[in-house]
Image (cartoon, rainbow, N blue to C red):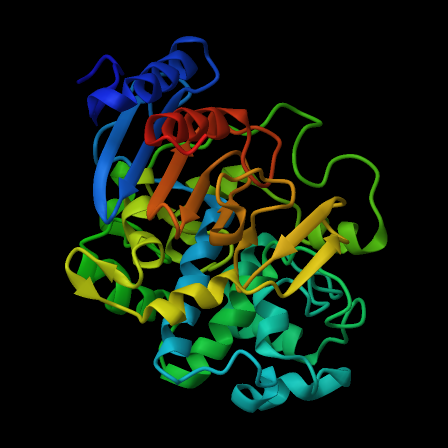
Length: 381
C-alpha cells in the first residue's frame, strides 16, 4: 500500500494491539514501524505501517528493514549462547583464553561473562576515535585489547554501548575463524529465513527505512556526564545520519549496527522463548537458552545512570522493566525505541522496530504500550 496504512494480521483477542499500533501512527508518535509477537514458536501478531522516510514519500512495506541500534546486541548474545551451548565457548573462562592479547593492561582475569554483562570495564575507548574507525574491526578491537579497564571488572556494570559487540565478536572470531556477522547469518538468520543482518549487503539498501533522530538535547550522551559516561557516549558521538551510509550498513557493528525488522527479531528469539527450537529446527538445548537468565550483575549502572540487572547478554526482569514473569523473562532495546522481550515461561516474544527515534536507550512507552496490550490478550496481566 502506498498510503502508509497498517497492514498485517492479528487474531481476535489481540485486536487491542492493532488499535494501539494504529493510534501510535495516527497520533504522530510513530512515522513508520513494525510490531510482531510469537507464542509457542508461532507468529500470532505481525503488523507494519506508516512511512519509511521523514517526508512520508515511501510507505513502510512488509519487507522494510531499519537499523535497530542496540537491539542488535541480542543477536550477538544469541550467537555467543549458541557457541556456548555447543561447548565451544566457556563464559567463565578468561577472555584471554581465546584472545591472548586481551590480557594486556591488567585484564588477564576479565571473564567472558563480564563482557556479556557489561561489567568488563571497557564501555568505551580512551584513545580518540571517529565514527569511521567503527568500520575498522582490527583497529577498534586492538585498541580494546590493549586498554586498561575504566573500573575494576566484575564490580559494577557500565553499559558497553558500542564496545560490547566488538568484544564478544572478537571472541567469536578467535573461536570460529569467522566474523560474528557471518556466524550469525550462517547459523541463525539463514536457517530461519530471518531478515536480520549484522553487515547489510548493498543489494538490500533500497529496503532500509530512514531513522529520524530524537529532538535536539534529548539524545544519548546529552546532559551532564561522568568521565565514564563521556568516554562511552562521546567517543565517537552518536551520529544518526551515519546509519544512512553504505559504510555503516555494510560494517559489522555487532552492538549497534544491525538492520532488520520486528518480524525478524521476534522470530529469531523464538529460539530462546521456545526452549531452543524455532520453525521446527533445534538450535540449542533448553538449558543453553536458560543460561541467558543467569544474573551476572545488578546495581547502579555506571553508564546508564540507573539500576540495571544483567544476565548473559540481556537485561533481566525485576529491574527497570516490569515484566509479567520476571524470573523467566529478559529484554533489551535499542537507542531510539526498538525493543524485544522474551518470556520463557509464557513462551512468547514481543518485538517493535520503528524509524522515529525517542531519546531513550532501552525502549519507551510506544513499545511498552504494545507489550501491555499483548500481555492483556494472553492473560498475563
